[in-house]
Length: 289
Image (tube, rainbow, N blue to C red; front, side, top):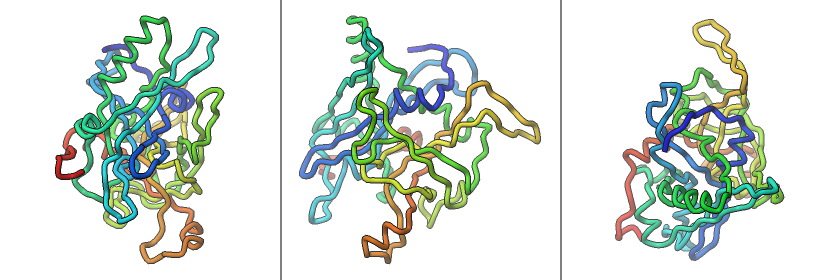
């Protein structure tokens, strides 16, 4: 699949890319996820080939722990993309992946602390698009987060204290008429680029709710960037894909729930983990059930 790729604005990102993720098994969990797309030759403007689509979310949603703290793979996960009807209203198109198919499509990081998973859904999404095309239904753009939005390809420089946006479904809350997730503001609360306490993550200063895990974190959109002392301008505000939010964070010695909540920090796994897991991640063997 090929086409002219443009950086969508934040509203495009929010509407077409970010999805509710539900997992079913010993316990049922609602979280957030997003479609990550990969295009060839990201450094070249013009036409690019779409070579992959992955559902990205948190590992603890797809591989949770039971009451005995033993991890297990969910029996089924569900996610959604959006179709536009003739009257311009938007409806969900649900997709599910179960059992052995989920196991074969999923990849994780070899470091068990990294709370990110990628699930290959390229063929499933493209088949769904082919079916809806025959019914004259339009699928909303879902390429709002792709390899061209990684920090390595952006002229936007990030620093501790910068404003960011978290896009998700806290406690399943969203605009159910238009199928829009909600946005929360936050701030980078640790030094950007460094591994916080040895983990490939940074701290987020923001009060977020359950169900936000798996949300993409992006820079606050801006029309301006600096490069070698030159001020650059873009007609469409640009953003950078910074990472994947995975829940509240507090020191390990904090056990009281009220004190834990008072910290108001969140953990965000760096965005470069996503392509790394796609290329080098491990799949689940039959021994990892």
